Length: 311
Image 1 (cartoon, rainbow, N blue to C red):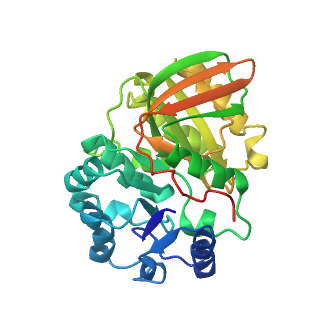
Image 2 (image 1 turned 135 degrees about the vertical axis):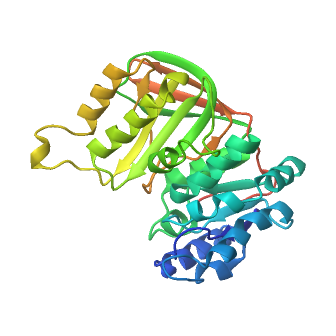
């Protein structure tokens, strides 16, 4: 059984029923879910005012009765908090006792900040409302979440249209828009020889290309060993694009950058998504249209006695 502590550092959870369903689903699987009061908290469009949401994050430095921290949802809000997050105290807590901190989307900024300033590993994966609270829990997402947080080493496999390649390095990334928003700030990780994994939602292919070119022109991509493209939900082109779609964007990107660009990973704002420990070590192989990513060196929760079967 895992002890899960909820935080809501971003947007107000409009889908209250989904969040409650997520709590029920995790509870039925044998886990405890604490700090549920954050689910209904609201100030304007946010899950509480800035001071309250900041406290959600900073209190992790002294959090005792939990081994997993789970964000309720994304949205917008953590950018307003970055200057005041006590990342050194949170990192000290993580070094003292493993704590799985998981979320994605807007929460990527906090995760990248912790990685940039303290080399602290957090998990980019499902959140309470959108994933655990879906009308039907995705078995792939459930299995891959528990695999990532309980296995000291695991391997992901998927089909890809990428050329054969091999790469090894620090696994990092998350939401593409949030990564770009950190360029020029103290919270942008300075990763050399890494494996960068990106995803996004509601971004047209040309906007995705523009953000990736921003990373390229800022010198970020050429310092990596590989770029993995996850899910880009709701990114359909229109008639004006005349054949310019995600595949065309990817082909154009491959012609401009020197590192391998691997597509096809189920990662992002979808019901079907893997969970990735940001800051862990990764070994990537691509051969004959098959990709594999072996991940290691990340914190885990105690697997003994936990119920990880899908409810």
